[in-house]
Length: 278
Image (cartoon, rainbow, N blue to C red; front, side, top):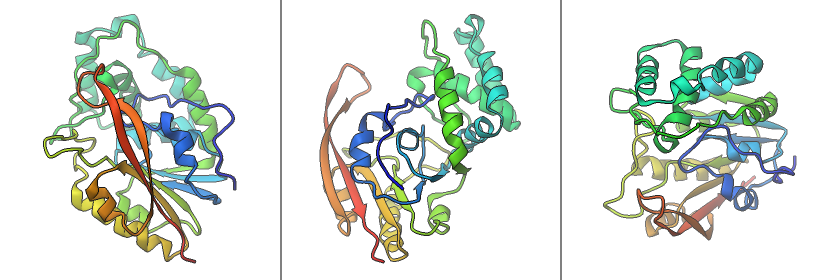
């Protein structure tokens, strides 16, 4: 099946730090053709939304994210209607936000959490997704004048999701069950650009440097089973070392390089392609 970018670029319905919407063309330029695309770190799903594979196996360690995708896949009309009810003027203040955030952290109902997760994503500061060590969502209120309800994007995602299977596993578990002849795109949490840089925890168990090296090793092993694997990350001497068994391609990407959105610069992005050896 073709790997080309879809005719018109489709935005994800979630705000997402490190989202790949602006890099879709560069990523797909390195993605091999295959019947199925596997994403161990699907995030907001920009690569999924903007490629044309017959099937998708989409994974993320964040259960709230995957539950949201599964409900949107299986009951899109109800899901979108119920989610819209959270996007009211009365819910767009700090008091209401903190109350809904507290409800989200206290309930175990996956459907309600999915609705609240979408609300929190669109109302919290910078659309961040962050949990503390107790697994509680702790991003502060974003103070936006009128948060956007992404109805068109939700509909587009639900339509594309008919080709997808969503699972919530760690990346090792997913690599152990790759479908035959898959193309795999890995977008792990990026390595810090400096010793003083850090990234906040996206899930309760953070993705550390040992995981980075392990992912590279699993990717190389996957080529022996007939899979192609593409990994994106920061271009550093360390990532070049762990990806030394891959074809390496580097591009310059404009992005915010500090907490102030106005401080932008060019950052080198590295693509490591492990080609099938079968």
